[in-house]
Length: 264
Image 1 (cartoon, rainbow, N blue to C red):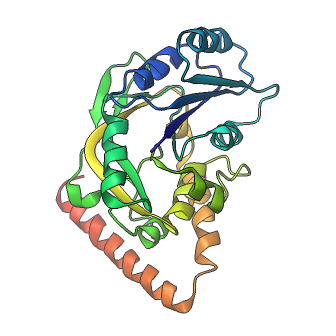
Image 2 (image 1 turned 30 degrees about the horizontal axis):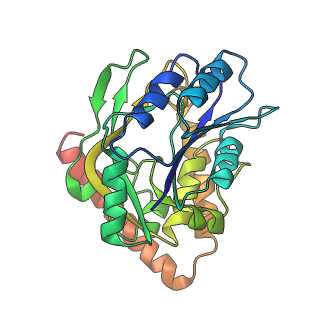
């Protein structure tokens, strides 16, 4: 099974080399590493060209105007020649050199209608690990997770850098380029309508915590943006599906009680 890694980049000269190296150092090196540079104004283009000279798997795309991360990801996905794809933001990196191997093996075990993901760690701007995101295995949702996503039960353990078939990504419409927040959650909802999700239960990607980003958006903006996305899917549910959603929401209430008792 062929695999492509798509890296959207905009002005990440400080982190880009670490990101690319972490892909090249994978035990299972992907067949192609597509780096979509979104008209960066720093030295990113020079860095990418140096990697292109050294590694045949590195395939750059230099955009002539800035289009945003969702569009950049979509361009990379559409250009990918592999059966399976995954995305990695240019300021993040693979913490585990078996990340891709673990996920592709899991897909092989679970079947072609599967999406594989891993646990994550958080790092700071100097690559130091500041937190391991580690929860009980039962909180890493498995199988059909569509209604769990709509009920917002999955808020802590499902990550955006999953491995999934390119054909299904195209079928569900790729990233919605009109969405600027939680565009990854929106795609996951649509993928979950078609696919089953499985976790490797191993650490995979290091997500970088910076002095800017989602954590510095207002709580109201984050909540409203996410709920707007979810509402468009809830509005088209049948009565029977509404019942299933309500069941998941009751489970979410029980989850909160359990987290509070554990002091989380």
